Amino acid sequence: MSDSSSSRRAFLKSSAGCLGGAFALCALVPESLSALPVTVAEGRQAGAERAYPLPAADSVTVDQKAGMILVRMTGKVYAFALSCPHEHAAVKWVPKDNRFSCTKHDSKYRPDGTYISGRATRGLDRFPIRRAGDNVMINLSVVFRFDKDPDGWQKAVIAV
Image 1 (spheres, helix red, strand yellow):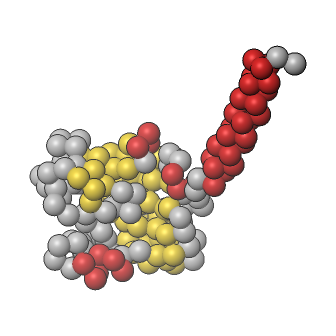
Image 2 (cartoon, rainbow, N blue to C red):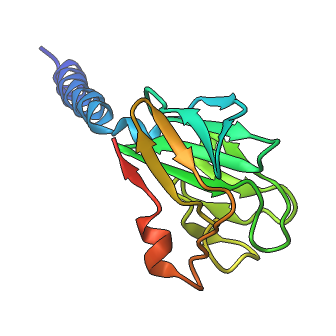
């Protein structure tokens, strides 16, 4: 056997090991890092709150009429204002980056509404949220701003 075929075999064996490791690493990437599906829905008015079906899986639901975004991700559900806190332009979900982005100045936010970068200086405003059976109830008349009420902002979440 020549030195070149031994080298080739060694290279192929080590490459196969690296590829196997890469595939194993891909299997460890949490689902939350994959693009969340986006749906448009309109909540049902229920007194001072709006009712939405509890999302069955990780997803983004937008209610344009109510100006609200509902996000389920990694066992938690959040409700945010549809507008960026900087100049109140609409935010949109950017699937390839797994984040929200302001349509006007490109401020960036994590799926839980946490501010990443851009002209805004705080996270997306959250609404109080609670679970009622198979529904999520959201009070759109109260807003938690991260800079004014960080404790309320952090608590505006339900575990599922």
